[in-house]
Length: 310
Image (cartoon, rainbow, N blue to C red):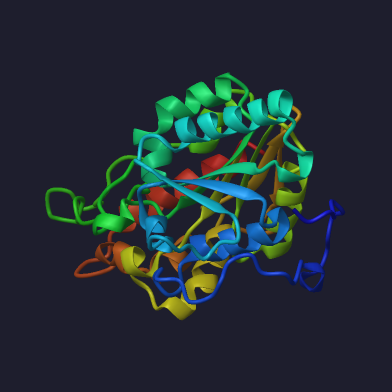
């Protein structure tokens, strides 16, 4: 683990040490992997990952992983349960068998939005309720990406997936609003929650430095632009990630000591259309006919969110 807990202000202050080896089999331009890479610069090598089945399962090809830390693969529903078992075992070894403090590990769940919002939510809720000391990293690519990009509870209204295409009967594609995982966790009163973006490395680093000082349940939700599922050129990942923040679609915020704070507030919201039109999953809103009603509904949802905090 890196020692510094000071707040940084510039990119040049980022930790230069890499904890993830290059050349992983992940998709080029994966926003979630970039966020995890930046996080690991701060967390260091004494980490045990419990990885839920999903896109990031591809990071590990037995018996190798690109991480300096340890890796435990789990089913989609059980990464938090696995984290509980590992944390309990480490605590027993420390308190009853004299394991040195320097041999202790940080326990970190790595899970996609499918596991986090759906299949793994119940055991995760139980882990938070028990006050488990763990860090939960959700890479949110807004669909079940590892199996062809099907609809998930995190798929936003108006987006198209393999199981929710835009049609004449269902012109919006996905017809429900995205489940708010941040609010669900916040209702459990954990020690720390935050949203991060791979396009905001300074904000991301400061949040990880804050989180690693705290004991208890901690959640980091990363916007994870997905070139394969969202439909954009991999080199445009940072453009998409920036627009998600600038349009207000993905607010950057944290919850700590019972207080919610937005860590970056757009001075003036960019119209959501600028974000939507760059992605194939929203193409049905523009061709063969433009659906101003659906685009306006997406914009209104964003506006209503920010009006709550004015």
